[in-house]
Image (cartoon, rainbow, N blue to C red; front, side, top):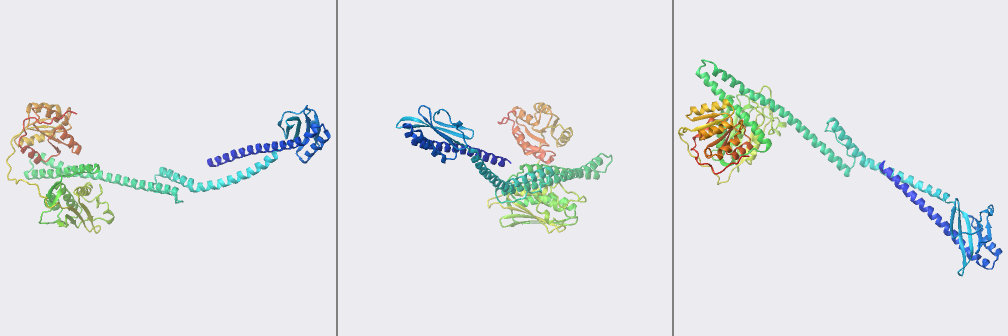
Length: 603
């Protein structure tokens, strides 16, 4: 409608301009024609006027009858007297003016009149008057008919062009808009716009359909991630309840008067096993956070792969034995030096062995082989367990994916072990692949790591014999969890240390200044004064600046470790901490008494 209205307006303005021009041209044509006729009569009648010969003038004037449009004509003398006249038959002489007027043209209604002076040799002799019929309307009607035909033809042509544009441009865009409304209304991202051309509009339709396809893929990915998240939370709740139940039973056994010593010992061992299981679950959760934020890292040093394998086997052998599996280990006798993190690689192998034990029915077979292949160290973990369906192999290393999960299967885990395996192996510059012949036919995981250069060697490690007892230390424990502080103090006092316990930051500051401990284990989230600010104040005080300060906390993110280091902590431990780690810290030499040169300003 907009284009048609514009076209009609342009045609109408053009028609008006052409009509105005034609009327002006028609008038100019008549005036020039009458002026020429008057000039001819003036030259012919000049002698008659000069010799006062009205008869000759009348004859000359009668020649004008050949112009059918001329109605009347007259010749006036120089003094304004009518000298001769002509009246076309059917006309009256009443229309002849009594006296001539100034030179020029007069249009009255449908008639046009002209006055023209007769001059001979510079001497005025008289005036010629001619009045004729002036009918521009008939010509205008013909002209408008022609313009009307042209306008109609133009509009028809414009309508045809607009129809083509409608089909080629507007209709596809409207269809895209309609599809967009359907998608927004029905949330159905499988709808696609129909492509009708291969031009720019076709490219627009392709881009729109491509965008819908991408949105559909991302929506499906979000739905899948949401489903996995729900499964993860349900599994997490299940896995956390499992160790809590035996711990509670063990506590009840220990509280029962007269419990046999062997039963109490088994209860303690059970509590320790279940506590390790809960620590592993919490570590998995921390690894999930590190993976999703891209902060998972390794500390790279040259080490022998066989050491990491030995640590992983030692860590997982009890679980494998509890499932009555036949476990075969075959390790290359030659050193396999790689540049990476021995602890993290042991975690990788341990996760693969744990998965093999979990997803293999009791009495199955598990094999671990470590060998050199070209310039790589290759670690293979194979089993004859439940296997992996071909369609599941591609996503086996994705977060929260659990293959073979069923309500009857125990110890399913959180679904992050294989994701962690892939991330850690890639951080070592290696690759990990999974292979299975199908469900019920077992599986094999292969880790391939690049070997270090010829010059790489293990760091020197001092041989450790029987270690001497830990010297008696002055130790301060500050934690708002009263039970944790009391239990840690009991352990340290049993080892012969002089221990003080406080439960907020202000009391910890006062105790530090009064007790002057050699070691301080501080929680970070204490009331009144948090651990970061407490550490900064201790470093600024010459009396406490030499104390070895340990952050013993439940906050274990990389940011927390970095903040603790900036605040002045010497090391950072995450609860629950291995008592052997605390003993290792206390076994070190006493820190120097003078204050440290680095001063940490309060934030």
